[in-house]
Length: 101
Image 1 (cartoon, helix red, strand yellow):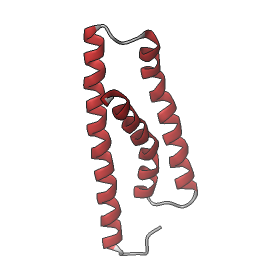
Image 2 (spheres, one colour):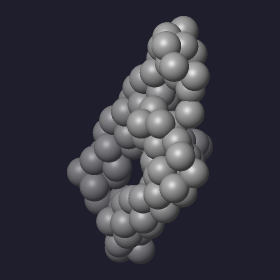
Image 3 (tube, rainbow, N blue to C red):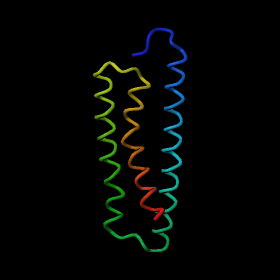
Image 4 (cartoon, rainbow, N blue to C red):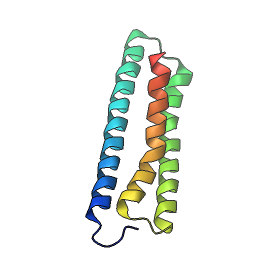
């Protein structure tokens, strides 16, 4: 937890979280575009389509677990949100790398 009235530290944590969230959002948009193109062109395999659905459940379970650990450790709201974002952001980044090949 941050010391009381440590506004610079809190502001810095909020900015880092916002940047990470925006990077994740842009990566997700790119993945959606690339997957939509694969579907449109008929190049998406059934295995990939099922994986596309299942990966969300596993990412959200991991995000919930990370957030719960951060909350149980006495983390403040920004740390809890950052912990929850970490596995989702990791999955979107790996998807972007996969589709850029």
